[in-house]
Length: 143
Image 1 (cartoon, helix red, strand yellow):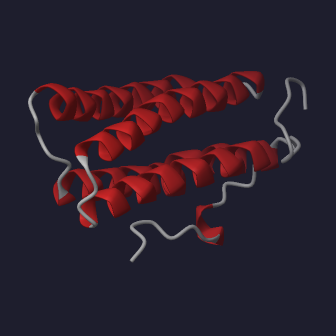
Image 2: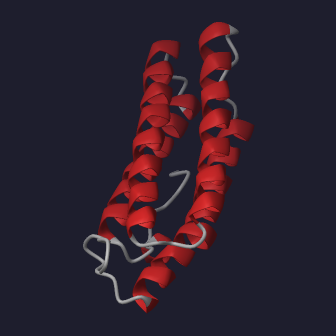
Image 3: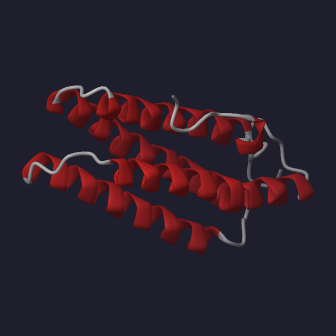
């Protein structure tokens, strides 16, 4: 069973952001699949490293789009992003250095955080862009 099922409800209406969210969901699902099927530590470590790296890339990209669009909640969004990156990096450190296993609680946290962040915070950015008349294919400065 897939941890996070991608569907239209998760779309924010900005193609680049939606594509990056789909990639994040796919990585989280890969990590969950590796955990539930008992894959080796090396494979789970590689997927966790991919999740940490791609999360940083996505957040940087999303924040750049928000800055270009003059999104008024950018500072709050940055803070939320930093908190998640710190939490995922801690998961990674614990996994790599103390032998802590990837747990169902960790996966539930990732599922909840990602879905909630998309459905509440990122959708607010999508609505802002729509109301400002900005292009869904790429949000550009000055529309």
